[in-house]
Length: 70
Image (cartoon, rainbow, N blue to C red; front, side):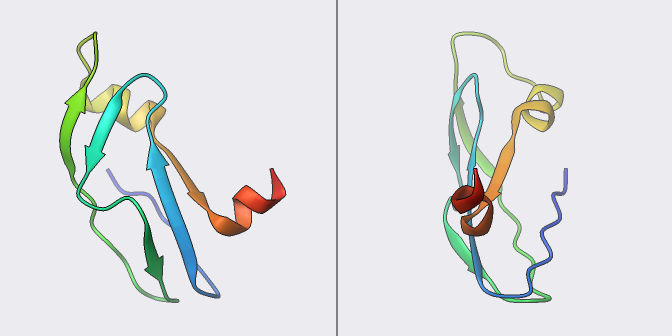
């Protein structure tokens, strides 16, 4: 799964799933224009089974720019 963010300035991102407590390899970082970052799921804590499709559907990625406008 890839999620593209194409910054024109430094941005910070935060990820979360709606239905589970997920531990990511990194959950807050800077990206400069042209940079990319690979984030892995280290652990999923959920009362129900969470598969890759569910993660793809529920993953939300925000930049500080977006948070300020919501």
